[in-house]
Length: 154
Length: 406
Image (cartoon, rainbow over all chains, first blue to last red):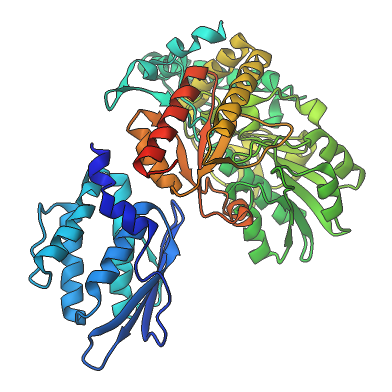
């Protein structure tokens, strides 16, 4: 266990000043996520253009440093990607948080991978994995226009 | 039994938790278990096991007697008038569901009102909400004041001619406020209103006397009283338990079963359908004896000292904001740390072996009112010491360091 690995400077910084914490004007897809055990909640907004490229992505919500930083970094990375690429990045991230030692996605640049790997410290804290993954599951739900709220218990 | 040496009665404190001594500050959630309770479960399963109340063989009779002994001990512990006013349930949650369900069946009509408070745990709100859905009753909320307590005057103010039931916590699991249950009951009874008390936090920390308190129902959680999980107690006045219908149907609760009619058993069997948590009930007798051997007055004095000490310590710690400051306060210290989410606090404290609770503590109504999504809560039990609270404060300071707070 290593708190320094969990609470890296970049996590604390994103947690304190989350990027894209707002509501996209003219969003055309959105979804809500909720962690009923701890009360974390997130609402992801997407604006896709005709080619299904993410023109804008934003989120609203509240949660711990891990969940806010994770949503913040996610929105930064997903902007400009198309739906297919974005979903592939989500798969890669969830795989890394669960078991994979590193990220494999070809849709992420090296510096983007480095940024995302800052969340890998969560692996050692099973109770906190849900904090890191809530916004990512919610993103997929927004793409798929699922109306039911994402719950981390599912 | 001397309270200063009580920690050694609890085997868990001999364990290292991630290489640390355990600083257990989560007793409002569930308490640790003394060795005599753990041993009793083992002994019962090893040497005495049988189901109760059904067979006539030696072990069955002996087990039935042991089971009933706990009922008698509980009657004594809470000074109930009659042994049959003690009903075993699977927890305080089931006890409150039993009360709401059976009162709902027999007593409440469309438009009737149930008055609860903003302090209530979800288990004293959701069961009434079921009746809001099924019977179209109304639920009103008595509000907290600025120090996080609900006063007699506030309760009285919220009563209408349609109020049939007042269901309140004895001791808030978030602000620690102790409600004036006796005064509320006196006032309610003068208006013909039934009083139900969620005693989950009251029973382990306060002196209980049902005949003095005079409430109609009192729900107790045994695992918060140094007893086994899967067990609760419902105290109900005999006249109500006799009058109300059964809650669950099954073996053990019947008198006679025919193809065209069924009659139900007498108290307390009427409310104890199916095989009960036999080993837990029998081991819980040891929890009651453990509490009695220390003396509830000594426990209350010890915990009051701890809370006063902890409150002073945290008040001096800038960035820490305590939730509520009731005049009459029980064993919880809920707080927030400006700039650090409660889950981050709990993870960082855990690294030092300090176990606290983070979240809304099943009190979302209260957290909405306080306009915070979650809080951190340290709660004390009989085994805690001032050193535990010093460690809590040191670990909070470590949180501040990690999050670069002053």
